[in-house]
Length: 221
Image 1 (cartoon, rainbow, N blue to C red):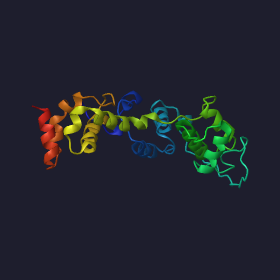
Image 2 (cartoon, rainbow, N blue to C red; image 1 turned 180 degrees about the vertical axis):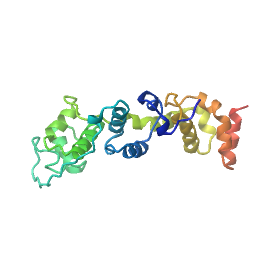
Image 3 (cartoon, rainbow, N blue to C red; image 1 turned 180 degrees about the horizontal axis):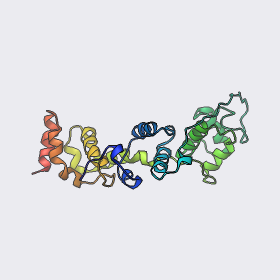
Image 4 (spheres, rainbow, N blue to C red; image 1 turned 120 degrees about the vertical axis):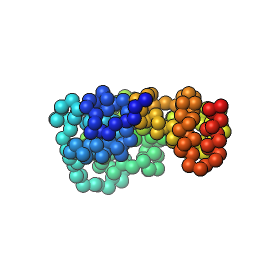
């Protein structure tokens, strides 16, 4: 299994997409290429794809609109998110609770992604009504970057494996296994076979932590 090469060594987007990249890494790459480095992870990936495929019209520098904020005392579905200075606060939860009839209203992931995109792009036309349509699935504007949840699921599945109960610090062991996975072209998911495959690696990186080393060694017996 080969290690992830440096970005400069990668020749195609297909090769690039085989590896896992943190958002912070994508930001550095975009800045190095002189293209827009703001936005969600999925958006950064799209710009890097455009770079590899020679589509300069899709990778221009970001330009944010500056809009003067106004104080909106009474909210309505016609209010723009920028106009009413939308926040994920109790005020707006109460507003959507009234509109939906849901007592303890919670914003879903796509609403969060859409509101952030509105702020980043300065979209004055996007309203609270549009955000409500996204809640009901009647409209699509920006989707939550589910790729960023891969690490969380990896840890959850790791801890759910009964074999990992022997590790005194599960998070450190999971992080070590995740590093092996994310820097490879393999699927970015936890599988029990990883414990056996990387048992020796876990021992070598135990750094004097006897409990971790002994637990890892037990996997090789």
